[in-house]
Image 1 (spheres, helix red, strand yellow):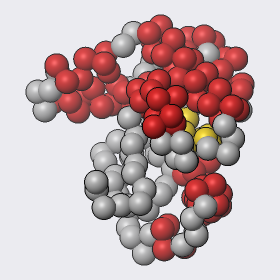
Image 2: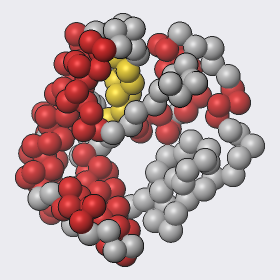
Image 3: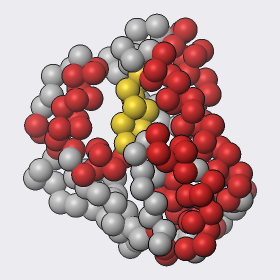
Image 4: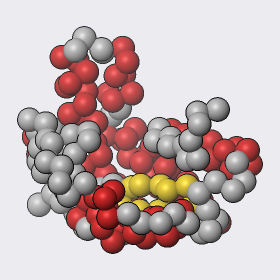
Amino acid sequence: ARGVSRVLEKTPAHLERLPALQATFPHARVILCVRHPVEVLSSHRKRLLKEERKGHEQEALWLRASTEEFCVSYAEQVALAALAARERPDAVALVRYEDLTAAPGPALERLCSFLAEPFDQKALLDDVAERRDKFGSPGPGGRIVPNEKEWREFLEEEEARRIEARLAAVMETLSYRPLAS
């Protein structure tokens, strides 16, 4: 319908619909990207500020989740992603955001192999300048780079510690270390 051979869907909530998507598209390959929970909630808070400045409070209600609501949702989504990757390793790959941004070449090469697509070095856009917003987050269309946004700009240290304590087991399964001191 779209005239393309690959469709990209990046809505995290669609993870809950993965079994239906796989039943509809049995040959689909799915890449699930996870990220450190403190960085995720920090990004939610940053986005909430942006949306409020634009007057989009209603559209951004989901970003107002409490710390506990966030932790429950994060744990559920990671559990769904891990289960999908275990049940269908031929069809579902799990990648950490931090691994992708720290070493994009090797990470993209592995993902292309998983997708049975040739890896093209041009996908790394080495000749494209970095694009960052005022908080240090990478912008669209730029080179793949680590996020330089400081999570402490959007979360208090104590809140980060609560998240890390609540999600310690989940973080361990993803090889995440605490960020809060």
